Image 1: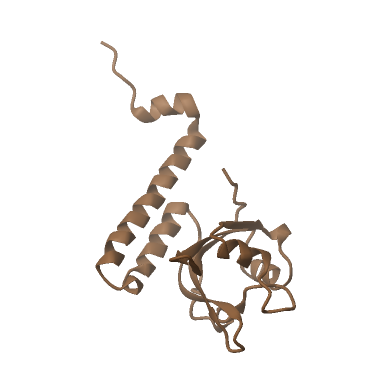
Image 2: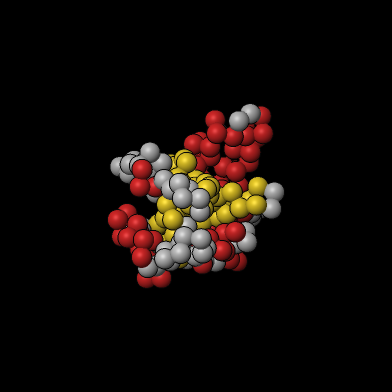
Length: 176
């Protein structure tokens, strides 16, 4: 009597090892989000956000996950501040670093004019970029941290852009 191979072997034969790895990574991300959502609904989300960021970082195999809030800055125009972050061992947190508070949301000269990334996020679009595509202040931050690529997911509250989850990578991010 023949025994049936494990499901992973069936899938491996059809879709290949990369698809299996990607599916497991996506499942881990969904598990992290579901875990956090159940805890956040029960109380103040700030009490659970650090655990969510850690779980997302581990699930996505990223070295850092940040939560930035967009808010009015000292001069009245919108800026972004890192409110919470998680980082792998050996990397320091950036949420307590004053350089990551009241940061411009545009590399342009006019702080009232939204840059390309901010415009996309405001529309609810995911932003991803490589070091070679950055300029100005953004490029400076990429170089400082050895970031080769970056992805950020906007957080919308109602229909308003509240902020974003960001994750830099020291290896190139490959869109699927």
